[in-house]
Length: 204
Image (tube, rainbow, N blue to C red; front, top):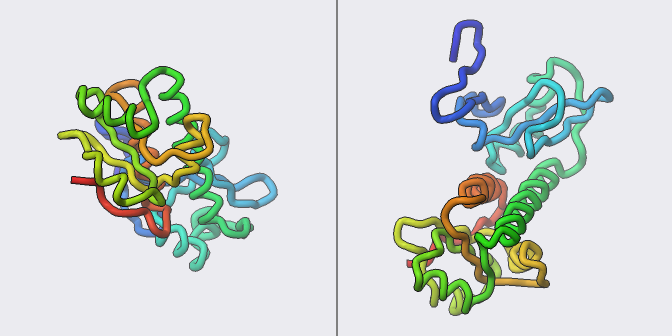
């Protein structure tokens, strides 16, 4: 942190301070909020809304504490209004963003869904990220393994994965390296912190 309390932008990306924990960390691990002209606290998941940013760690407990202890009003230095179920609104917005990114990866040919396609990508070592639905069959999920040195995302639902691939439901999906993979992983990590029950760890 620089003199005067401003947060510096470091080599690994811009950093901001959480109004709940006081911890300074890269922006990717926090949720940005702004206060609208009429005093409503608005989540800015994409980080594009105008106004002074108020930052909270992408963590369900931190957000619940911010609401309970009126941290937004203190940070804004004025009275503010909060929408009902702010935590749920934020979780839903981040989940939609992850789904949208997955959909873009599918359209660019960097993501597939379905057991056979995912298995084929894993066998050919094309898949770098394995995605499995939190509410999918444990027996079915155990048949696929996270690629060596790769990543696992296991806290999206079957309907969320399905939506990204233009179908009703999907249990298995995979992402190739490059393209949108890094952004999907970063946003999915934010979502994991916001989910009340994010699901277990990746398969062996």
